[in-house]
Length: 492
Image (tube, rainbow, N blue to C red; front, side, top):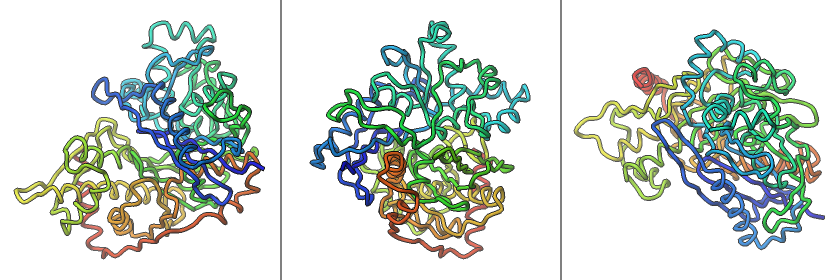
């Protein structure tokens, strides 16, 4: 019986494909980067052709490296950069404009207008989200209003709108399916949290035709079957989909209310399982769908920092501090502290709990004695300090303390950063053996959908811990660091 799961992790800077067995062992991995497009300051785009090529390239690479027979694949799972929005032709599947990436701030004037009209509370109550350019709804509206002829074609039913998961499902099934899952749909400003359905009133406010949007399915439903997807046989079910951060929560086996994780990728994303009831936030967090399985919805509180690993890329590519991202740890370790330097990585605004789209990156405290090591250390500290406000808001909203925070993503391999995170939060940081838990979560959801796993207990039993980081910083030093950080954030 086929037991291998093919997990597609379509991320912001590249696509990863993993072949994973029932014991959650990674049999093979393929990865392919693609270009980032910056048409104007604050605008970020991807070419959907690049996205699709990276997925097919990473898939071929995984099969070649793992020497796995494609016929052994039982199911395909997808996890994806959320909010990134694509319009494509309903018949040909060809993209009608570059994808507008989640980081893009071009729709700030729209969200500011909606706030001025007093509509933010309407969106918050229905969707759990704040009015911010981050989310997909205003991106869909921008595409419809700015791509010549697109709105007219949309009225004729010739246009599909969706997040990256929907675009991939369309391609994997050769155009037969236009669908998304509840977790991705919950990031659009268009879906009601209460019943996981598109809201007609919100669609009218943003002028987005409901008929262009995908069907919303459970995360473990069968979305469709493969057709002419590389060397993969036709008829393989695509039966596990979740947005990347929800997939990471699932892959971290955070199945009980109160369990939380933080993923360090391009940004940093902290999610806490809040159970069967959507928990409204009074502290600038988002209420979101964690996953929907067999008709039962699990919700989460989320706090997002838009820039985390991207600040390391900036030091590498823009400032030429080092040639590989992993070198930042040794460079930062050359300094015992940041020398009073604070780096606020608000390159594309501040996310939760501040939600200031106009904020920009800031470095303070530079002296004649400031070195590259101090700046590298300040960058890591900035990545960690962003999460202090988020965790405190999460605990206050939920009324539940978080004594242990699970971590994952590429930057979680940085031991210095993880020690900083434990110190600034004053909490234990738990790193799993498998830090690429977005792909793992997609595999687990697909495995549930295909019957490879019986239930979540099956998955939890296979989850493995790597290392626990305990806080060492005294309270006075912690308070001083956080006060210095807050003063810098106020100026950003």
